[in-house]
Figure: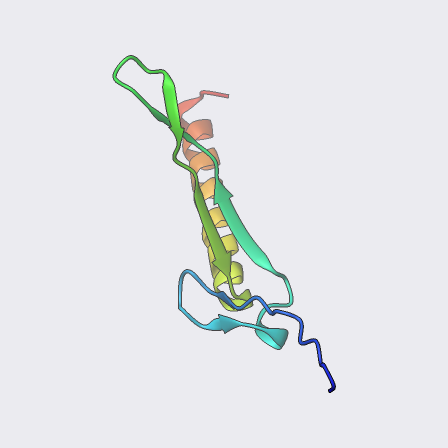
Length: 84
């Protein structure tokens, strides 16, 4: 009798576009994590309310660009108000 061990594989699906992440579209292994706590009525943390996304390379690049643009606009608005 011959036995052949086949290792398990993990299939990752992009949480934005739904494409299966493998090989050439998952070179950067994109992940986005927004860490935050869920608060009760008194403002005390009661649970983890973090958002975790697995991203293909295309969505990772688009979200990275969007974050950079939003941060630039926010910095400009803060400077314009004289808050820095």
